[in-house]
Amino acid sequence: METIRIRLSLITTYIVFAILLNSVGTVIMQSINSFGVTESAAGILEGFKDLSIAIVSFVVASFLPRFGYRRSMIAGLLLVTLACLAMPLANSFFATKMMFMAVGVAFALVKVSVYSSIGLITKNPRDHAGFMNVLEGMFMVGVLAGYWIFGYFIGDGSSGGSDWLDVYWVLAVLCLFNIVLLLSTKMDESGSHGDKSSMVQDFRKMMALLALPMVLVFVISAFLYVLIEQGIGTWLPNFNNKVLNLPSDMSVQATSIFAASLAIGRLSAGAVLSRVSWYPVLNVCVLAMAGLVLLTLPLTRGLEGQVVSGWAEAPLAAFLFPLIGLFMAPIYPAINSVILSALPTARHSSMTGLIVIFSALGGTTGSLITGRVFEAFDGQTAFYLSLVPMLAILMCLYLFRQTTGRHKAGEAQAA
Image 1: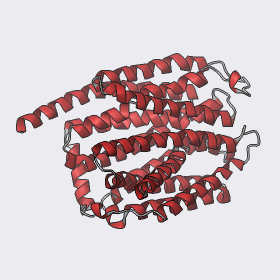
Image 2: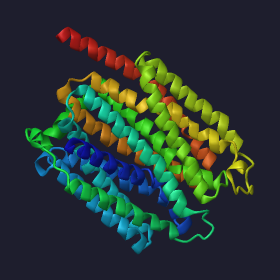
Image 3: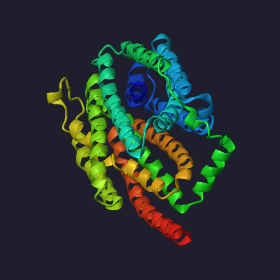
């Protein structure tokens, strides 16, 4: 019974952060509408979130086992509770930036703690993999739910006020619920106390990995992928609102198609990749992404002045473009799996640190670039620009296959 309670607490905590982390695109749109900030200024919110995750993840990785995973999750949730309460009270763009910084710091604590706790509560590798799938699946449920929760509080956006900030009262209550659940749950963390590595040692391990050609190609690939995903995902609500003329609530809710596509794509890719080599599958995915961009963006021309009051009046592009998530979804998990499988288990923690850092940097860069192009030109041009990193990823995938093949061959000869 206690194990079930622990698993439930990990899942519900992860769902809260799924809602908050993936609300950045919605909050960018609302910051532009409510606080009067520019697209480029609003795009900095991604940086406050992602850079906090990257920095704190690296700094606390070796410290958390001594502080305690349950305590770390409670501390993260308490920090986010305070940030959520401040949002409707402060009602400012500065408070929004501080809120996302708090979410980033807290998620770094929570992600390391949750992932480390899984090994303490599962019985064997199959149980570990099964619960990990459940956890990530529920994360996507949280993402989907978040779009509709925010959409409900935003309404049609006609008032142009700050009533949408009331959503943070609800999120604060969800955080408090999880704090109570964790406080009433016992966790045996004795199995984690053997990790005494220092921050300096962790940093040296990461730098040593970057000397490997396959790791260098990988981090570039991961950076480019997240740049595309966050650039599109973060600015899709604003694209729906400004380019497709959807009301504010529909703009957010339509973005849930993108999240659903990512979820379906990742679940179905598992079955495909168990039978087919990752390299041809990912090449097809990238080409399909580019094809969908070239197919759907021309459909967004000439929509100026069109009034949309319901789903029946929404342009076809509102339903087609988010399907890019179907083809985008398999890339990131697949390249992560390839790089980790090519390295010994002892080096996985250092590699995971690099994954977190370069993913966060890619997310911030993608959001900032897309925001600046969106402001300087238009939404269509901003999303057309995603074709450039897609081409770069195709080249990186080729180099990644070559370098991992050479690395494995070298390891085999050394053995």
